[in-house]
Length: 134
Image (cartoon, rainbow, N blue to C red; front, top):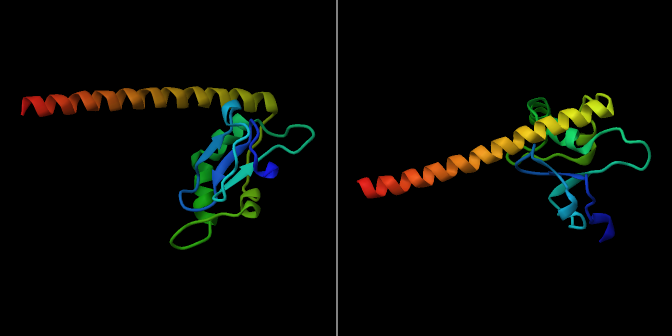
């Protein structure tokens, strides 16, 4: 089981179905087990080539999504192998720039999540008013 345990800064993605969803493993998830429908991207020992925050954002972007759509196999349920994913072209600027980009995009993600929750709360209030006013 040890080889399936997640480490902080691993990147997890789906193998089949809803491709193009990536998540960065945080300290809270360290030690969780990787499921059979998922793949893990992990740094190899040695000098770091990528920042996990940057790579998660890059893989979640439109260019990577287009590449996945063009290269995934399967007609009804799309799937991707680790070999195929390893052939995806990835732009890797210098590590300090990767960190800045990853942090900036993560901040935007946090804002989107906050506004999404706010929008859901406003919709719930609106629904209550509709019920009472009609």
